[in-house]
Length: 128
Length: 200
Image 1 (tube, rainbow over the protein chains, first blue to last red):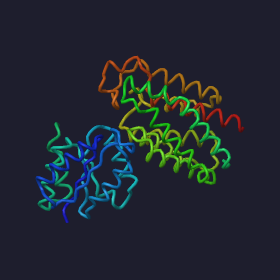
Image 2 (cartoon, rainbow over the protein chains, first blue to last red; image 1 turned 180 degrees about the vertical axis):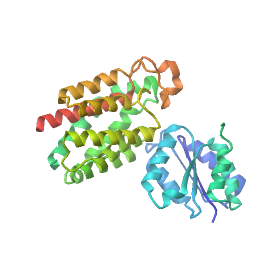
Image 3 (cartoon, helix red, strand yellow; image 1 turned 60 degrees about the horizontal axis):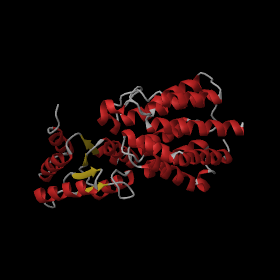
Image 4 (cartoon, rainbow over the protein chains, first blue to last red; image 1 turned 135 degrees about the horizontal axis):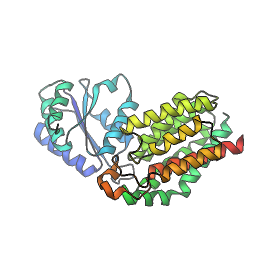
């Protein structure tokens, strides 16, 4: 089973659009889920929604999470903590630009790469 | 701590957040994204709505449940940060805390918040109130003195240049405004202290 990809943006449009780009690149070979916006439909991120997105994209090979601004990262870390062991050990929040990171990580994942390899591919996009 | 105190504490905190929601939002509009007051109010109203279930729990369990509720309802970056504070306090506090165990639990809970926010003191955040608050508790300061110390610490975030959170995007323009999270933390502190004093 291929590694899953989760996209977490403050904006549902950014998250959905990023997911569209990933789908066009890799088709349906990769479990993919996105969430964006707060519980009221405004800009923001929502821990409960992130937990559900991770569930939807769940793969026993692991899940790579791509985030945009700081709050998305903090909320994603909280979501991973609340999901707890043993699944939490197979979820990694990537330090990468959200669009490029999601596309590159998904491309890597579609070839059956391990979670470590998928994350490493996304991290190569970050300025050192 | 009896259920009645959990109820009194939650009510006092939710009341003060609701009463100051507009002020908190105005602070956040100056240097953040302008939703702090509304977010905090939504979170603590959700906690208030849970009171029937919360009031029967031992204090540590009630705090953990409050933290989880805040994580799920406040949103933004404040949800995980305030949620972590309450969840960690619940994890660290004994069922019948005294001042020594409270000071120790606060210290560890504040470390958890700092780790969650990847932040430290002096960066114009809620931590700038939490550290002096913990020091006042540990030093045996009077209840009124603890609340005053928290207020003074929140005010002292005004001249700081933000380097964490969304306010950091503003750089020097963040100078001259009190941090909204620091102000919330001081408001919560005063509500808790005054409630405990009344029931003592």
